[in-house]
Length: 271
Image 1 (cartoon, rainbow, N blue to C red):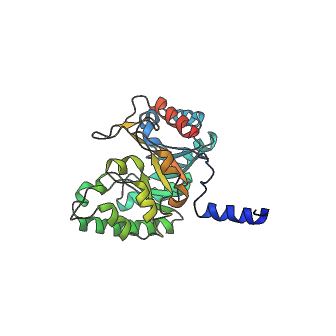
Image 2 (image 1 turned 45 degrees about the vertical axis):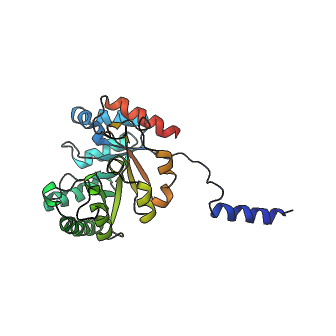
Image 3 (image 1 turned 45 degrees about the horizontal axis):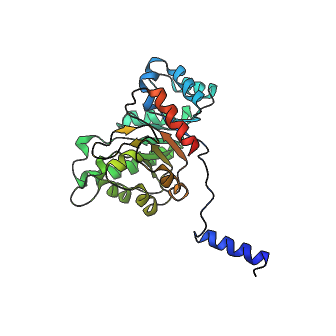
């Protein structure tokens, strides 16, 4: 028979080896990409933030401030117990980019995120290589401003060009110490790829994810989180390896935005 010490050592070794599953856990914080409620923000900016907080969200990610001064935005967040770890920049033009960095520091963002690359600049594999160098430069500027930089994918990065996936080119050609990835779990699924493959290949490089669901092929219509086909439990089980710290719910075109974000929040809270 094993004595207590030997048993515990054996148990610990088995856990390390992956023979014993890790204890299940819940998400300790759930965020919202505010693009989901963009129409509501345009009509009632602070009232919308208040309703988001009342549902239970504690983190938000901006996609524009709708003309509000960044100082006012920060004050509104504080009034409603919200923080905004990240924001999508509205333009990659140099002057607009510098203004985005200034605003990010005022509001209190940690990450400045590029969420879209102009179509005319990404037609060939060489275009993506040039864009990767542009992202490196922007990331260096973000670091100099005291911020971190991230790139958010859609599905166009998973359409092969000259035998390669542009997403692979972007990951290989950008500096992993400067350029982080905000993985959109819907778009990578629509693009026919498995996020777990990238988590394993580039561990720790994905501090943020967009959590939105798909009803599956062929149309991949968006759904509230938990109402579709994406296995979030399986994906989130690899959060530590991926480096995920922030989970932002999103739905691009919900029929009822507040009902959608509540349903998604309730699902993730129970997960």
